[in-house]
Length: 63
Image (cartoon, rainbow, N blue to C red):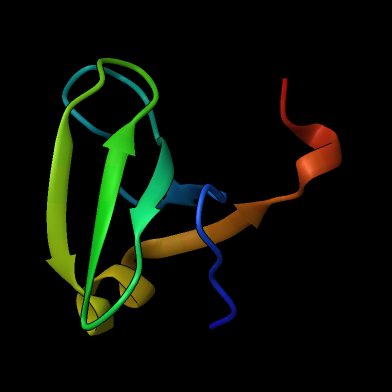
């Protein structure tokens, strides 16, 4: 999967705050994500993160 720093991704599962959109803050063996709804940050193994990503939102569609 072609992930870049500061990409906005939509996950398959909804976060408890109601948002599905996350910003990528760090890429490596682990991926650090920030919820755009509440600001919660978490680090997940790359394999798990790639499985849970539904789509990458294009830069043109971002507010």
